[in-house]
Length: 117
Image (cartoon, rainbow, N blue to C red):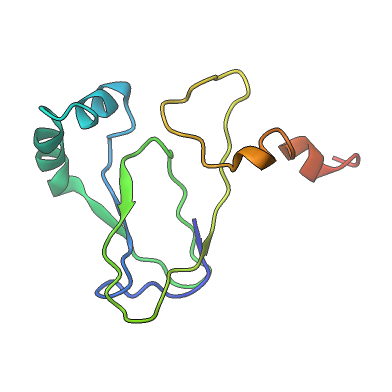
């Protein structure tokens, strides 16, 4: 994520990250209703908030469990820019795709580099 504005921690709902939850085992527990609460309780002490100022960047494995916290600032939205990268030989990296279907397969990193790369 690249913050396009300051994200005020008390009001604007910064992103919450749960470190070490990028694994297949953590995802299996998260999607199992019998295990989910226990996983979240175990991961809670290590949680981190993405407290970003305009222009700050957060780089993370998108499989890491993360979520926006509550935005309590009336009339505001968080503005951010993000890019996702996936190795083409990995069919399912364990997290849902974030690209809109109409753009899938449309632009690659090679396309962005141009012919002079």
